[in-house]
Length: 372
Length: 258
Image (cartoon, rainbow over all chains, first blue to last red; front, side, top):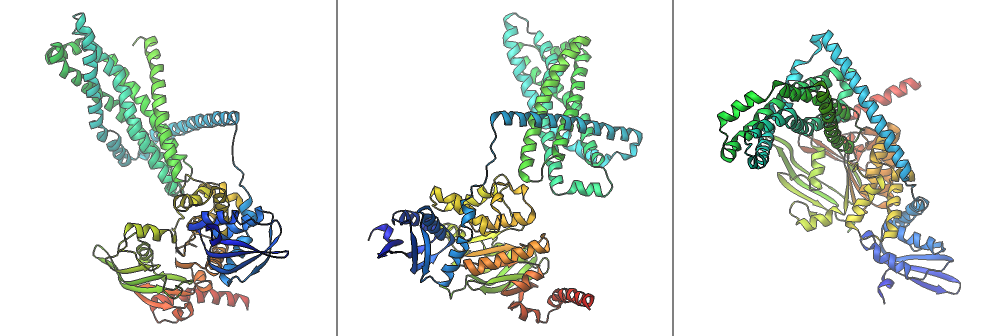
């Protein structure tokens, strides 16, 4: 007896073909059962099925059987000697055999259609951001007219998250950038004996360009992503709907405190970054370039015009507004499943960083033209 | 094999901190039955189910599921056991990044050796057995209604041909018509496919229409266990007020009729 004979074999008596089933027909053995059925040599004519020797039959086994019979072009003429429970399983599967054959239509799009979809999505995203920005501005205007509508407690709590708790990481990163900058500048400047200009470079570079950019990227990753995840989860759990039905404005309760907290926090963090970056440069300037801390500070004092610092702080505030608007809006427009929170959060961080860099390029030209 | 109980719970004790949730809960469910666990909020019904399927360890007591002692079994035995039962969580717990068909296919691909040409049909059979239309297969869980999501979760729970199915409040959040259709699905699974079903429920209609047996939890103990008709007569204040809601509803209906 070969392996396939364990599950089924064909018996013929004259015109009549009988497929005898035997043994355990269940999911763990489905591959063997299917192979046995394929090897049984099913005729393309009506069959009698004999289930007397069948010990177990589950829906997977029944499906394999019925599909093989249908594929061979055979049909079931009679079911003989099946137990009541096996009959029920066969009937349950037989009634749904049509459904199992239908391949559900797949949604596939061509390259052009995908490109078009992405363009439309991008347009919707941009107009959506603009709309949200407008509504945030209107809500801010409301605050100006009615200062009591400002939720100071929420503002303070957000400020704690986005500013105070971000200080250590900002100090660490900008300090190290300052060290690296002074080291690399120093290597070049030393060749010309222009050691002292390292201080100018680091001071202006850090306060005008590097500190705002680096702090904005850190804040985008920390707070922008957090805004999206928080507001997205609140939308999912219908908290935002609850706020609305209680007659409160989600704009005033959720968005404005986050927006203001970030716009206040980012310039402060940029200033922290300025100081810490220069401190980093100062620590390596002494041993590497023979610039003592006193000389360093005096040089900064005489060469770093206040404009440079202000440019950095102004840029920080604008970056903050963009990060807050993008983060909040992406959170308030997640679709209602947990997957989309992840997608939106990722998207927030990418959008924030890209817009920070674009804004920075714009500011570089703007301030140049204005003569700062 | 038919004689031995499928689920045996023996003097389970559960404590959360100082609070004792179960204080010696025992019952057993024979093959081919739909048993319901009922009880007030906080009586530890869902906790009990989690203890039976090996998600939460009880402080004391024994659980035997399909003849295997859940809390002293080795990891291999548990893995083998997990293929023999299905669990339907309260909100379905479908994987939100996969389509319904992919959700159902996941356990089949992981745990069964299905020939590739049979995988698609088998997935669609599960979806059809759970009473979903074929078109639902390619949809994402977020595109389905509450009732359909529960059915999709049943399709996934049925994927590996379980012998036992656990359901945690399957009809909560469904409208009465959808809920009754879901009840009929459970009865079909039990009668035609021979599943043993343990359901945690608050739904009186489920209880009165399809359940063979009710197990009532109160004060950390089983206060009643038997056919629903018998349980209804047990003299317990919570049980009496529970069933009275139903009688009151029928009363108003009758009054309106006359």
